[in-house]
Image 1 (spheres, rainbow, N blue to C red):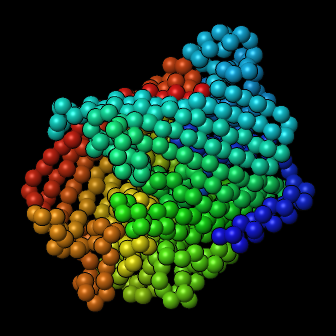
Image 2 (cartoon, helix red, strand yellow):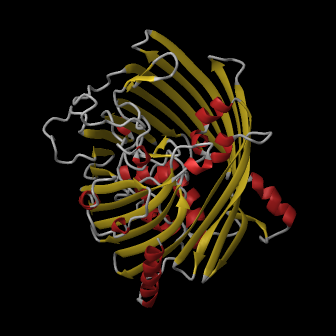
Image 3 (tube, rainbow, N blue to C red):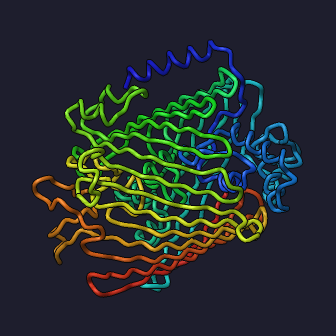
Length: 564
């Protein structure tokens, strides 16, 4: 690792010596920021070009550029879109910030009482803000209050969660972006219901360990990122740190490669964009399954390269090459210029190689298509028979329509995903595609498929209503009454296919068959900027086809989020 860091430092020094264009906001915009939904809608409307769904984390400066492009086509926007644009412009375009649209609690303009009173206003809010030519800092207080009530199967089950923290980020010397976020919280009530509502708790050490008198959790991210534009239309960045990322595919509901569903990865990342060419490389580390015996815990690594060609107003086409390995740190996977699957074979085939190909269209206004195909390990052998257990494949087909049938400010998504048995598994269990036991890739897992639909309606710039429905079919491995595995069908990435032991063919959806139908309604309301309420109702029906019984779960939760 020290060799790679030394190389990156030399690379950064070389970039600093080059003449380059300046971007004043290099820091990243977190993936949960609502601006991404707005940019996606504007991309499908063809107000914007591709916004890189395969590698979606943008800098504040990139978001500002996109907002300016939208503003240049202001006449094509609906009234709600125009107001939404104005809402985000005052956040991401520094020259538009003033004391009429921005409230700074500490060291801001006006009396302290006035600044505190403006918390209940439409102004963008910061705990602290510092802006100079060579250094900027935006610091926000963050927090969440969640109350969840289960109606069925247990009307007595409920959970209350609360957390508080801060996020600080900015840019130094016009090229170096930085970010740090920390939060800690507590859980009162049903731990199982807490995991359901807040899935990231399933890979949180403090929550899983549960050795203190009150069940608690904490999260921390941070990074440094150097960014330069050494020539017109050329963008280069190098990042070291930890933050939530999605990477490697273009799914709407989920990403079959790095989905962001598991815990956040620690990584070194290189991005290069020039004209139609987009290239990126990541070397990341994470952990294996949780074990109470600390000496049994281990680190695993993910090395991945991605090449994408993006043709404006036509389509994007990309390929991702990924390796999961453990037990050593291998120099062979440090270079970004290499095809990892073939390199892995030269290292005596010890690691888990995954390759994916994807396509996304941009040639139709208000309508976008995407497709992705994934191959886990066996690329060429027996490719003519995809039903073989050794041929671990998955694919995804989707379409997104914006303002379908003339419905203003409405978006519609339909998507189908199929992942065959044994995908994400590996003969060395330490190399399966999981982090802390949670799938890094598609959340339905292997031996499953899903039909997904979503309708989103932006009622105003402050109110939105979403409806999601999914039908999932899955074949689970079969266990006896004592929890012992009695038949393996490729439904769990922990149990791999063993050549010469397991049947050569893996029948899709074989095993303990479960069909799941889930409907979610989410009303989001922001009465005052940076103070957000989410009211969510979830109804899920589990149909155990093999066992011949059904059960349903339904619950509602209210989440209050603060970010100022």
